[in-house]
Length: 220
Image (cartoon, rainbow, N blue to C red; front, side, top):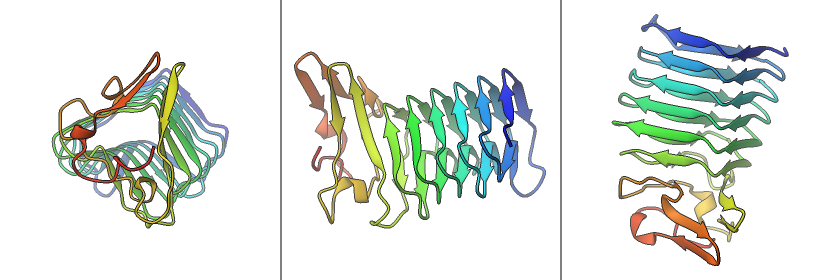
């Protein structure tokens, strides 16, 4: 409990069998992972893995690079009230994910930059993860920017805002975007402030032509 990892350069080398992680947290409380550089280079190798009843986790201002198959930048599993903010995550390698959430609620994921290279996803929401808020994240890649594998009763929220205004998708019942948050961007810009959406002085715009698959063009 009350673990702090700060200002470190951490490298997880190779596949040691099973699931590997540069930082592994189990049933931790109020742990803080801040301003670290984290690199993993093997299959099933995760940058930070918070598992089983980890609560009030802070992941702030870290740079994470993963390059192995089926590896995850951040894996937050069966945890409550994480705050994941201002991290830079690069995911390369088949089957990888920048940010993976499973059975996690509620959480705030704010101003993260997730750059996906190859056959990886930006964010994956899994099992009964719900009531998670994704605020002002920049996500780019060739695979789905967001994959939602939860059922329609588990809602998460996508929001972009600045001093000029806000785009917030709302839940308008069965078939709404928040009940199926799968997000596919057809061009190379991804999604973020200034990336297929714009919020300026007296102007709010979404490039709807960039989203031909999924429900993002529903009510906002």
